Image 1 (cartoon, rainbow, N blue to C red):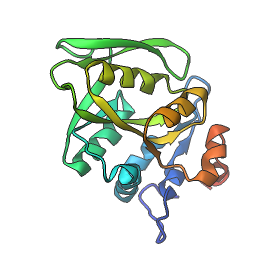
Image 2 (cartoon, helix red, strand yellow):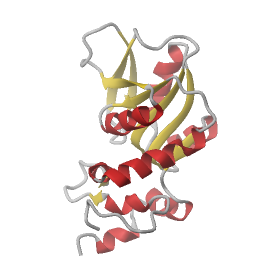
Image 3 (spheres, rainbow, N blue to C red):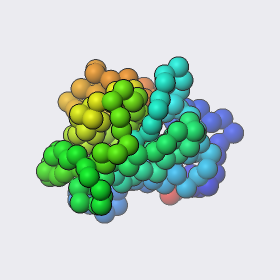
Length: 200
C-alpha cells in the first residue's frame, strides 16, 4: 500500500499494512511501525484506537518511552490535551533523575531515566511505547512512574506480543494495542502474512 494512501473502509488496524518489514538483518527489530506515522489518517486512527479503552479514565499526563514512543506518546497527549513526559535512555537529561536498569528486546542491559520535577504522588499516567516485545522496557517505565508515587492508568502500544513480559503487562494493567485478535498469532510469530505482497 502507498504510504500516504488510506482505504475507504478504515477498520481497526488497517494502518498495520503500512508497516515495513525488516530488510537489514537480525540486529534490527523485525519490522518498522514508524511508517504508519507518515500517513496522517493512519496516525489519527492509531491514536484513536489506542485511546478507546481509556475514554472513562482520568489521565493527568502521558509518558512515552525513548525513542519511538515519543512520536506516538506525543500524538496521544495532544489528542487528549494533556502534557507529555519523555522517559529517556540514561545520560540524556541534564536535570535530577530517577534511574532504572532493564533488558531490552535484544537482551542487552540498559538504563532509563525519568526527571523528578514533573510526576507528583497521585498523578495518573498513561504509558505509551511503539511496540512491546519482551516487556522489559515497559516494565522499567512502570517501575519508575510508580516509584515516584504516580498511578499507571494503563499501557498503550501499536502491538503487545504475548511473550512472558507482554502477558504480565496484560494481566496487571489496563492496556490497549492496535492488533486485531485475528492478527495476534501472526504478530507473536513475527510473521505478518500481508508482508508477502509488500511493495508488489
